[in-house]
Length: 175
Ligand code: IMP
Ligand code: MG
View (cartoon, protein in one colour):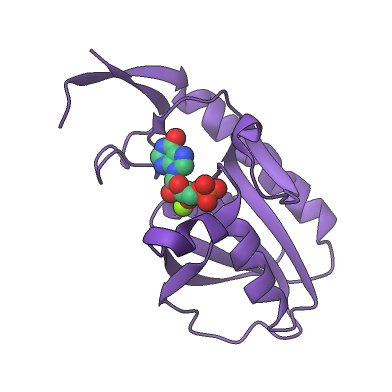
């Protein structure tokens, strides 16, 4: 691993406060309904847990894991399902919970795949958004933070599988 250090970008308190606000907003938007949260592993897991705790309408959870195909197909944004959902989503009010939308390739593919399964509604909630990096047009319904084009870690996001457990968002600075 290249020599590097982590600089705090968003503090633990700021992240917690914002997640609470989004939880309240989702609770208002889905009043009288149930919400089915889909976590994209592994990055979305910390955000999902904190967010789910702040939602006051009935919540059910499911998890999926995807990876990008290498080589030529990568630019097309085709992703491989490594672990599929346990439950069907037909007829459910679904929110996909992601750690970050960067180029938008993963999410645009995932959204169209999920749409084909016939949910009653489908929204996207992301902890972080790097809008300057967008290649695919993805409609994000709930965003906790828009961030500049920096490589970030913490709160589920990794650098080579490390730092997911940081309670804040940090920028990886190479020394
Ligand atoms: P996409 O480019 O929008 O398809 O994003 C693909 C994936 O790249 C995200 O789900 C993250 O797992 C990863 N990623 C993008 N930017 C960062 C970052 O700044 N830190 C850590 N992972 C990132
Ligand atoms: Mg991800």
